[in-house]
Amino acid sequence: MTRAIAIALLLLGCADAETVTALVPRAPATQRERLRDDARLVLEANCGQCHIHDYDTALPRALAVFDLSELEWSAHMSDVQLIDAAGRVAGRRGPDGPLEIDDDDVARVRVFVDEEIALRQSQGPS
Ligand code: HEC
Image (cartoon, rainbow, N blue to C red; front, top):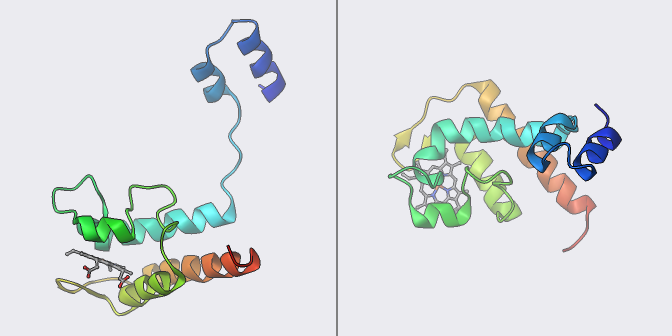
């Protein structure tokens, strides 16, 4: 179904907004979204205990830096904090001790952090 037909159905009252949203093809995930979500999966597994607000073990001060339950989990992080996060993953060390993280997962976080910082720089000072 094309977007135009879906919107026509909505206007004619033949479909509610929810149905139309479900019918309209979603834009494919951008490269950045894929990298963001890939990095999030690695962080969820290793850092989620404190950095996901749904968990009882979550810590307010950790959530204030980043909350992995937010889609744009890195939005409030400074460049330094992003680099710090990638460094902790690469160092395979969390606050509670050593972490088992393989090289691919280290790279997933590193690539997102590099891309994100490059994107911020290309957008100029905010
Ligand atoms: C046991 C809880 C816990 C775990 C697990 C945890 N963090 Fe955190 N993290 C915190 C807390 C609490 C803070 C807030 C700063 C502070 O009080 O030290 C924080 C802050 C941070 C900061 C910001 C530091 C700064 O000075 O701005 C980064 C980056 C970070 N964490 C990355 C990670 C990464 C990456 C992992 C997983 C490899 C991780 N954390 C796992 C509790 C945790």
